[in-house]
Image (cartoon, rainbow, N blue to C red; front, side, top):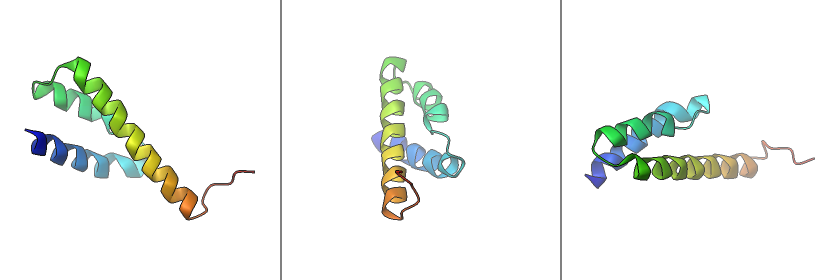
Length: 69
């Protein structure tokens, strides 16, 4: 079950990240439909968005796409 959730998360990340939309928009309903309680699916979705945003921010800082002035 964990590998299925990982694969679904990876696919949604690739689909939603170019548009700048968090994948939790679709990930939470998918997790709930797989039988995971919503009280668990919400924090997982938020954590997933946080990790994704941190990775994108780190990449943009590394390539000097952000101006801190």
